Length: 64
Image 1 (cartoon, helix red, strand yellow):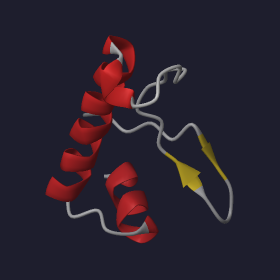
Image 2 (cartoon, helix red, strand yellow):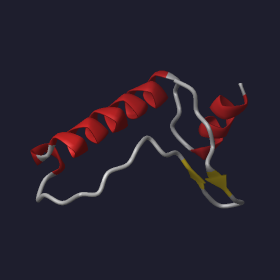
Image 3 (cartoon, rainbow, N blue to C red):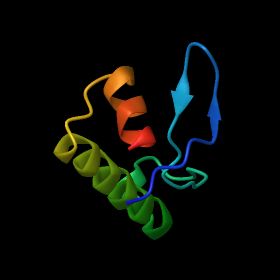
């Protein structure tokens, strides 16, 4: 997985994994948002595998 910082400033960094407009009560209820939940889970699992636990370890992963 390649991590590309989209926006960062001195206080925050954002990691965008995908996007959908939620139009149903639960995200699992619609195929489009269910796909985005899978992407989000994959990103979370990858970050956990790489021992990303805070902003410093996230930045270290981005520069390596």
